[in-house]
Image (cartoon, rainbow, N blue to C red; front, side, top):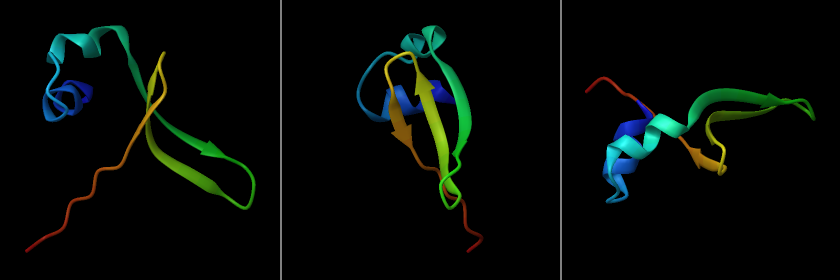
Length: 51
């Protein structure tokens, strides 16, 4: 899945091999991040809807 992100931003999808994709929740009043690519932090959100 992270490889698609790199394709969308015009980079090689093989760059995703050095990243880990995680869903992270930061406890505040429940602040939830849909996805984080690590080591360089890049935030992403993916949504699917039926048409």
